[in-house]
Amino acid sequence: MSVVGGGIKDSADGMLGGFIQGAEHIYIACGYTDFRKQIDGLAALVSMKFKLDPYSSTCVFLFCNKRRNSLKALRFEEDGFIMATKKLMKDMSF
Picture 1 (cartoon, rainbow, N blue to C red):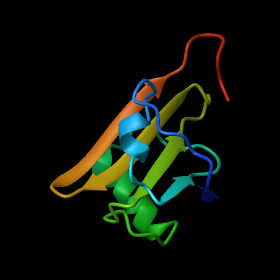
Picture 2 (picture 1 turned 90 degrees about the vertical axis):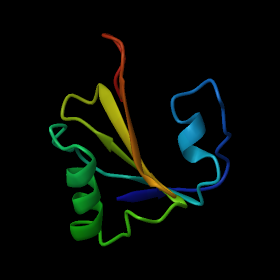
Picture 3 (picture 1 turned 180 degrees about the vertical axis):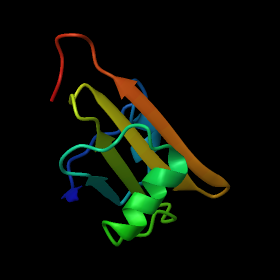
């Protein structure tokens, strides 16, 4: 898992606008993640594989799929987890 720090601009127009607001750490899972995993599976992955606290409200966790054309973002808020998925257009990938 990699850490992205500093220089992140919050944009209400972008997918991650609401996710990164107030975040102190953004973690990116290197490699690909099985996208059949939902909130519980991703939270378990954060905890067991990366030894991080998925219940930290100051952290955002990002995952990509095997084809590198989709992202999932996971964050814990006061009353529970929130997860978003973004699928990239046909000619776009990372």
